[in-house]
Length: 483
Image 1 (cartoon, rainbow, N blue to C red):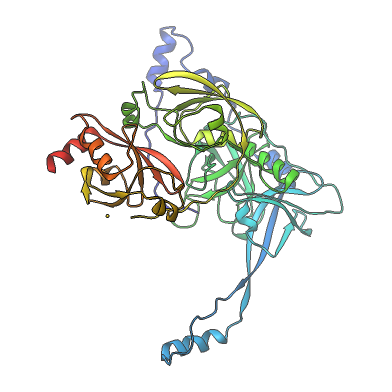
Image 2: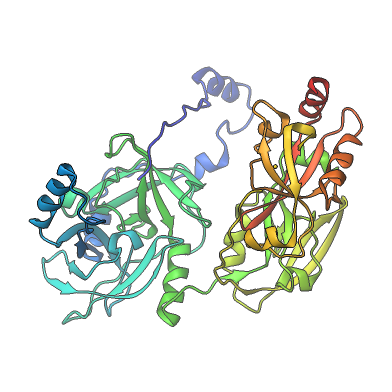
């Protein structure tokens, strides 16, 4: 559940005068073709709901929560002794219950829901619309997309939901949410698709449908239906300041949820494609610094050694503009598409290298989770940065390759050009304007050798990823004037 404010956006309109003038002057049909083709608003959703209700279930979970022990020995402190006696009288564990929703996707009892609905439950009960209750077992869970697949063994075949196929959902289409808000059970709300492809900071594969159909706590895991009664999404989150619905809810697209379910069913885990690159958005500042015609695409900030991209010949600084023939407009799109690509597939990538288009084929590998740690290390240098050398010992303590060449940011001056560019202590600067810098002196020389009016392009390693950061010409010039 998220908190925040919703922006107000202006809406276009077609005036009555404009319609009349177009008709009188014989300028053709004044309405755009999508409006002519749109379905009229339904007079009732009753038939759709009647068909959908049997496939929506309530989910009740129970989890044992253990009370933490009071640490430390007896110190004679009266408050500590009071707290110890107070907590010693309380039960050492208690049962925590939660409610959610789910949707039946097969006659043999498979149910799609959210991962956060089942959590670390000791017991999962599924209540059907006829109030029959069954124990459920987890087939598989995926925290990265918040999808879980569970199964019950009913004494009869169950009705299964119709899943929408293809990306036919449009902003403005009618949608219906069914679920178990606040434990009320079988609640139906309706609205429209407010937006698609929303990133809300939930994880690396954010691609949410936004809707104003009322979604509240307990709706999680329930279906979002289109006007044909097909499931188009799994309700997952709300954007709220109070904890209740304010007209901004989010659902996981059914294409993604079904793909995850297939993987969980076949192997009990999610197998994702892996390209082996670190990427970032191409901002207007970066496009200028790299000499690109326009902002857009996914900028390769690092290539994992011996990974699929490395073997295919991708290089740091390449801009991926298309994947498997489909344009890539931002770096957020690429991980989703690569993750959905079967391992072993030869995927065609269109890249811009030094401003020239190039096609590269990469054999997609399997994504495996990795963890890397970083730390910091302190003489003042240009741009308001304090840097120190990166020795093999320091690199090893930071959890990075001891052979890495660069300088470590130890401090950032308040109000400096570096602060404006959001550099931070612990960053490792590996390149300045596409040239490697292995010592603090080399870094200072590279920055001070910049021509006035030119931006500074830095290749920075931060935690487990690398990224390009630009310091605008204006900020760099201001810093030099101040220094």
